Length: 182
Image (cartoon, rainbow, N blue to C red):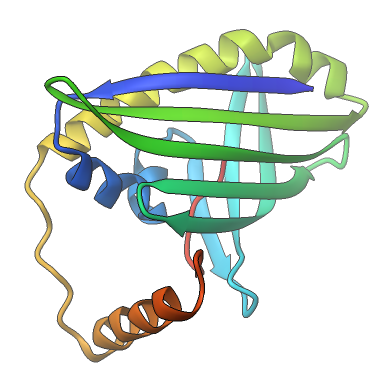
């Protein structure tokens, strides 16, 4: 099992950081080797991530579910590598907290691996997670510091906004149907 506990300091207001980390497309743009795939009717989506373990590069594909609440999110994923040698399932939570001079993003998660490459992946996980977190943090800080994109004003965007308002009135948690891979 791989356990992840990370904190990232971002010198931007919490609302801006939340805007970025709650948007799967923005998150994927901060993760080298990550791609978004198709969205599914149940609100889940596909994603992939290429991870380097020394000279070995492994592409993982997953089906991902993302649940967002006010400044907090939960992600669950299930998938495997392209060769069928490693399968995984896992979950993570992330929170955006106000901090002196900016924002702190707190992430915790666990990934359970099985298959032929599981021991290799687990043995190199510490270094890989540290490298990916450092890269993600730098890109997140850069993205949060950039200009806020203009709001979407199309018909689909208005429908999405209306649906989110309705769901917030009826359910404590909101399901999001487009997202990112871990």
